[in-house]
Image (cartoon, rainbow, N blue to C red; front, side, top):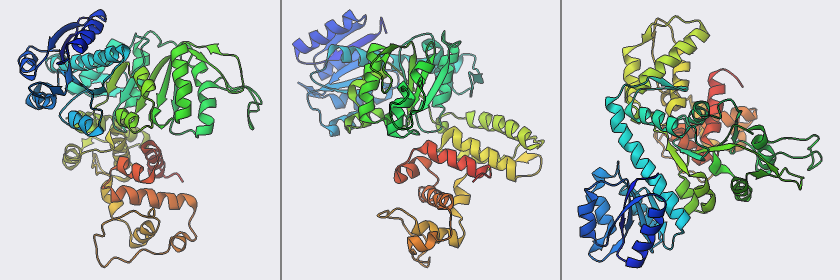
Length: 475
């Protein structure tokens, strides 16, 4: 981000000069402060990004974060310190830091991190501009006129024509795949293919073949040649959803592909060049995955060239009503219902509910209301209520099938004790057992699908797909 203003707060002169030289060469406008007091004064001048050391001669850098917490929405602070403990990183992040670097840091990583931080600050400022600008209700598959979505629309337009890798983050159901398709359609690769691959839905032993292809006879079951998603996306965009679910061994091969632009099919010794733009997404915290060793740090920085965060539905204000009305029209037409609008009670529910499952949860609630309701007005209820009010038989079976070691508060002391797992499941199909376990886990988490998925050690998207099938009356 050429021309962005960066403040370096570092008391070691040699390090401050080194950082300043590298950032200046990359096109940044740099200022340096060596004490907490000096940084406190310069902070008010307004910077796109701040590189902050924690150990300063006159105090702790965390104090600066706390003192200027109200300004961190528009200024991204990168904490850089020799103390690499996770507790210091957590403290910095809780106070609003954008990123956390441990000395020594390479020049490439420094520049990339500062560039991303400055872009984030720019996006935050555009939110303010969007408040007074003409707002769009729809954009490339999105519905919403809230300020945060206006900023997302602008960011997508700004990055669409680039070939740089985009890393989309956000809770499950916030529209990360919609954002990936919007980036593709709004850019110069729109005439090329858009190929999506879910890294969490494909078994580890097959993911490499799905991604890079294989030759006939490469392994048992390889009865024909397969091009692979990367080759199929040639000239277009390859979207890697749930990227943090990828096995570490395959992460190495993905990194090599990103660096070389060459793929090598399973069973082949001949590398092939491909021209694709990579867009990836995750509903996890990628920095935490890196810190805990589940995601390669070098791959994260290779993918995180342009970060794009999707806001949760609870932060989008009246967008929830606009989206619900759009779903109502679509599902009403499908079901042959002539709906005049959403009932006052339904509107109150839309505005009151926290929507932990975001747009996907809202879609399911509206579809259920259209199918089971009657009358000209749509009455929307949230999903948690029917899940908690289970019949005694289902409740006992669900308790019996709960994973061993799970501690659950018992609301009714007179409730029947857990029964034997095998006895409870006798005469039931596997799909019935699966449904009982999933619905019981969601109920135990108060309707939070993400938490339930974590308890069951499966992907939230897997649960949402199953819920959608069950609500549609499928097995």
